[in-house]
Image (cartoon, rainbow, N blue to C red; front, side, top):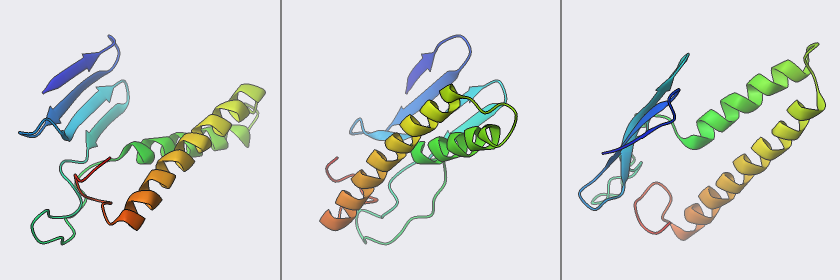
Amino acid sequence: MTDYSNGLYMTHMFVDDKGRPEGGTTQGPGLLVSWQRGPLKDSASGEENPRNGAFVMDLIMATIQRIEFYQRSEFACDENAEALLHLNQAYDVLQSRIDRRTAEGTQGTHKGA
């Protein structure tokens, strides 16, 4: 297990016996995230495993939706618009990774990066 803390947020990251990410938790004010534990496909059978936690893309999308909500209110501003630009870019880059891994047949597994 690896712990990270900046005094406000505490993250516990778990690894499997090969040192690969294996879920964990992050918590802070108003936030408790249980990260996906294990791959989405069974390594032996290739069958789908159920989701059991959040992915980074889930939190990015939740943040995008929250800032878009602000942008439809009196709190709209240039900084929010720029943050949305970068968050959408981050989401798109991670989606590109999923698309590549899907094409390779490795999405949902611990094969490759």
